[in-house]
Amino acid sequence: MSLTDRILQSMDQLPPFPMVIQRAIQLIEDPRSSAQSLVDVIQFDPGITANILKLCNSAYFGLRKPVSSLREAVVMVGFDQLMEIVLSQESATFLQEPCKGYDLGQTDLWKHSVACALLSRIISKRLNRGVALTLFTAALLHDIGKMMLGQFVQDYFGQIRGLIGEKPLSFNEAEKKILGIDHAELGGRVAEKWKFPRSIILAIRYHHTPSQVSEDRDVVEMVALCDVVAMLTGIGGGADGLTYHGNGEVMKRHHLNEKDVEQFIVKLGDQFQLVDETLKSERGGEGKSWLTMS
Ligand SMILES: [Fe+2]
Ligand SMILES: [Fe+2]
Image (cartoon, rainbow, N blue to C red; front, top):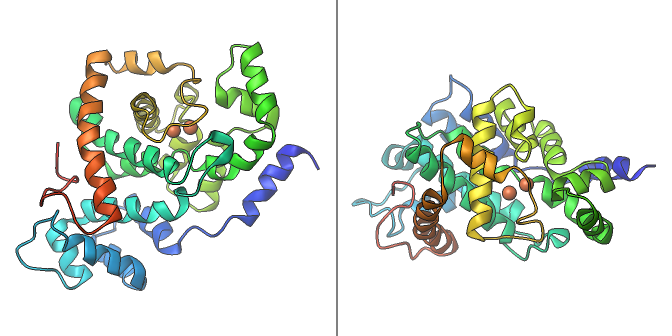
């Protein structure tokens, strides 16, 4: 069996993506979905329900009256914000493990992913675009392939590094040459298997090569841009960090310069600290919500 076949086969050993989150992600692109549909999906998971209520009642939401049910939480906090909380919190169960081949320690990949998701809102506002939940989700999950490819990258790290040293290849190009598949393609296949909406599958698959996609180009381009800025911040960065190509082009296409990046980094720093603290404890961030900050 070829190495690539072994990698693809390893997808079968993946722990199932939490069904509740899988359903919640499908709701994002379903025009018939409502706040009630989200409640219907989540209410059967006591762990997620408890986490949501705990977070909604924490100081950082500063609600006058404590919420005691999911229904109330949706009314008080809103569908999009509740989804963002659920996704950020629950993705940690998947993304917090160390990812050896990429030199990512405990929670590093999750931090990079959350940074990318937060940047999707910060950058969308700067570019005068609507803030979309699809984009937030795609940004949060863009590197999910690293969780599966990490072990193989570690086993063949010497060869991947060697190739980057010899030829002007980016990390994912070298992955593809040595392993037959890169983390973006593997992530896209996993997202397909988990039946994510098509625009999210494409954003994961093409986040390092946005020019190769014609469909849903907007979401893909934005995820690529957020990833570039997230890597520049150094939050949750790994061994592949600055080896990707085309970063300057992505910035140029959106008419962004170094000054913009500096501002994004400052905004992200504030918001990220709040997320990190709030999701780790119930202490909260002085009653201010990272979900509504700009
Ligand atoms: Fe990536
Ligand atoms: Fe990334």
